View (spheres, rainbow, N blue to C red):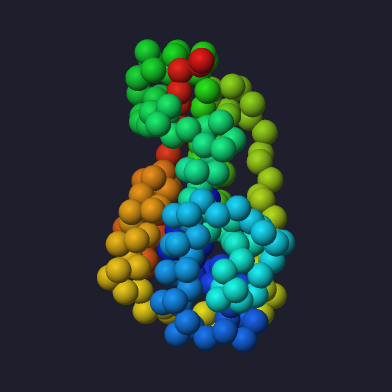
Length: 193
């Protein structure tokens, strides 16, 4: 996953600024995105270059829908999961893991660190001690891309904190648009149904 603030900024850049839009259009764009998300809009096209057309695209859906809602559509409702901390220090909790579903959150901002953690868990819990290969980064620019810092309004920050609250919690992201997530990824567990 990725910080909601960075997801919004990145998608705005790709869908608007890189196609002739201006960074100053962000205020109208996030309000449009807020309305589309609130209305539970369904994608009406594959890709749309102009948010003023009010077309919610597959690209918008993928980049802007909160991760917890995407997971819920896939049958992984976060309200059915609990955070599991320090399992290795708690033998009772560790033994319970053999009979429960587990989810580990990988964050784009700390992907290499999170993969090392996953490798450690696989080795200690499942005795699968092979090296994990890094995940290839696709859609990254070969040249350094200058993205201006957005002027996040207090209203836009509050909207992100409300709409993406579970995503901010899940990725251990700061509730402001500038900080990186905490070092250790979240590990969630849920009793089998």
